[in-house]
Picture 1: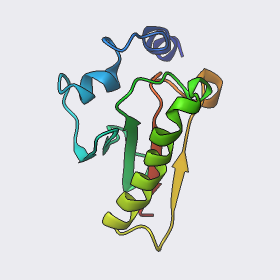
Picture 2: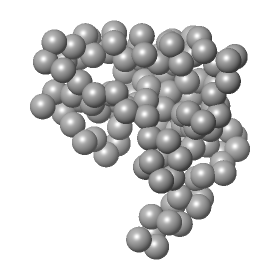
Picture 3: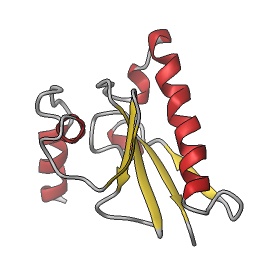
Length: 122
């Protein structure tokens, strides 16, 4: 438990320059990128919980779902449209898939940059 708490403490308040997902977006950290658009990037989760487990991340740093504003309406919509397209591309659109936002520490969020999990392929 202590190791997980240290990880959370080290990532919760990260500024965009130190955010893991921002580093991936800027190409400073490796990821298995499966899609890159103007406002959204998608890559495979490094600890998958399903045969298909992708993370869809807005390129704009938004800390959490609690931090979205009216100005973010378009990028949030783009997350869902991208998820739908990727589900089709990965062949899980008809068999079914889950879309999950973890919100804040109590909701399981441990990287504090808004991201949508796409899981399927069971």
